[in-house]
Image (spheres, rainbow, N blue to C red):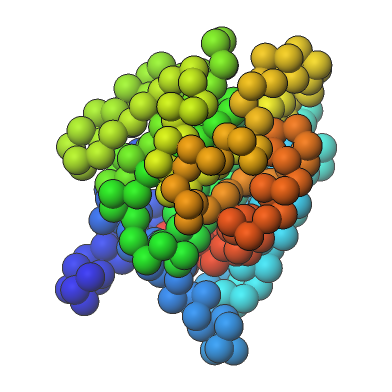
Length: 318
């Protein structure tokens, strides 16, 4: 990417919210991925890079987390700033304060807000009222930070993104939505296989298909896991019952029984396929131990890259 283009992209990203990948152009997404790889190189080389010195990120959690909390907190520290953990139980929004009021108050104290919550409208309302950048750490509709790290990981292992095929096997949840949009924006082909009643949101699917058609790639949604995984370069899955749907666990185990990523299913993928999972995983449920702990698995490279991808987001917009 030319230096003048990078400079223009850097200017355009300052002060932006990071709510969904659909809000960003293909060039902006690729810029963030390249920046993440560069920040990872600096960190591994022991180079101090602190563009956010003196700045503070507020981290609002309505959902518990391992990777999101630790990666944002460590990332902010490495960028020279400070992160504050704000549980919804500790904030007045837990007692009914309007999101808009909370957003305006936090904006007076903080330089950025990351929120991990349930309803996507909560993030949208927060961003609309806030005067500092807001980052979507996860909602029931979208998980853009995870997917930015995912495609960074693919690029590191495969050396390219355009033209690759990713197969997502499982629940048509926030991960499926963000993976579809990310793939479409980056010129990748994606196939999603979910059982009847658990397909991705129709509007999210159509949006991804519209983007893919302009980028020269494809989005397929099917009920057949073998069709989805055929000749896939990347095989991806997630838990069958995401956070907030635990009460459906037994029902989902029956519905998803034919959607386990196992030794038999991956025979349909390319011989050099990569296996990915956003974690936490239920070994023996959505994926067998032989696959998730096998030679094709890059789940811990993927988890590590949450740190670097989120550092790129924060450095760019804050």
